[in-house]
Amino acid sequence: MVVIILQYLAMDKIEHIGIAVSNMDAAKATWQSLLNTVVYKTETVDNEQVSTAFLQAGPNKIELLQGTHPDSVIAKFIKKKGEGIHHIAFAVTDIYAEMQRLKTEGFTLLNNEPKNGADNKLVCFVHPKDVNGVLIELCQERIF
Image (cartoon, rainbow, N blue to C red; front, side):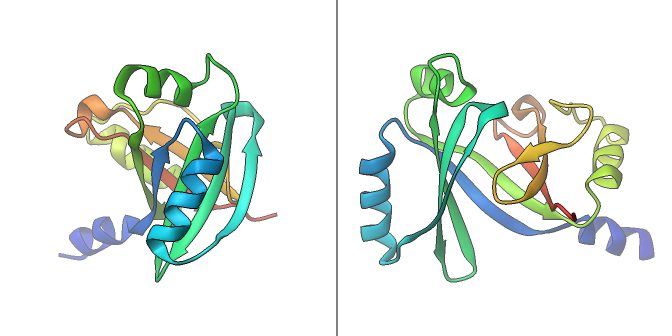
């Protein structure tokens, strides 16, 4: 029973939902109007070739993602599937342990080590083929 509780706690909560957009300014205006809030943070993540904008709606966050290069993952995603939900991110307390647990469970990770992501996070992605077509991101707060 303890093991089940610990596994349940491995993914604390949905950290954010990532939305791929082709025009950041238009998307920010749309989502600010929809959620009746403002973008509280923007950031460019050079290693991912993406610009981001974050909005808060109650306890939930939305991350808008626009590719900064035509060969970026986000630009390719939009070209193939169009704008829309790109990923669901889960907060974890120990990304290394969670990555190992998921590997043991047979999930395919898209990176072998956590990498720096937006919003001061270490991140790792789980391949959508293993999760009913949904890209999953693991996020852990970076400690400096």
